[in-house]
Image (cartoon, rainbow, N blue to C red; front, side):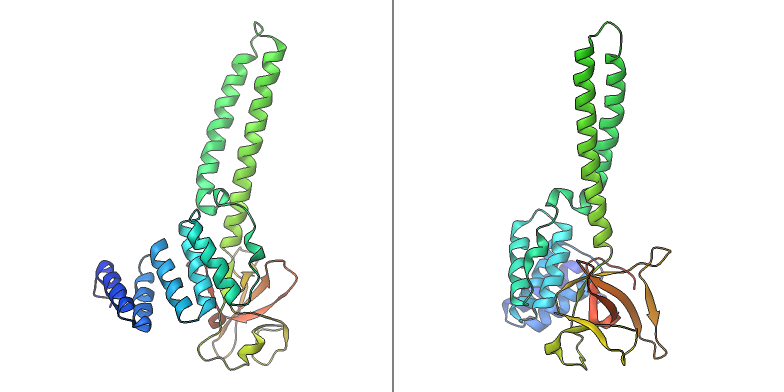
Length: 254
């Protein structure tokens, strides 16, 4: 597949899906996603995994599609359905609206900078003695309010960006050695023999802890397995999880 163009592979995947060969369609779409990303691509993958009743991976790819196109209501509605089918409450989705998506962080920063400096120059003009104090007061009030609003928007977008850079979706590996009915364990120590602090349902969003350098906190066992320290969205449950038991929403090189 590596020698073929993404466009040809995309149409091959569409034809495979239309013929009912969902496994082949997933294989092709997954190969394309290693080279390029689009909201439509990940939404198609999410729908295919949903049809295959692999709801956790459907959640993962709907999250990726929403990252690329945060304003798409269909993606959000389908994500809620996939979460419910996976046995996960969608209540965590009631966070910041799409306008505060990490994709708009740069826009908030530019708007804040332009408004702040433009307002500062305009405010300096209104400070001239020939203008009354009431006019100066109103101009200052509008400038301060606008600066606060844009600053708050940038802050929320930055916080969402920070969370997104750490977010992973818990997934059952193909060679699950433990009872999948109990979920995926978050272990006390980074090792297969460790007991679990708690178990999470596949499809659950987890957030990787960072070390002092800002990288995901990890440990490599003697067998070569890589472990990461992760916690729930509320932060109350945490533990070590193997690399093959999750996939990141963003393309993090882990």
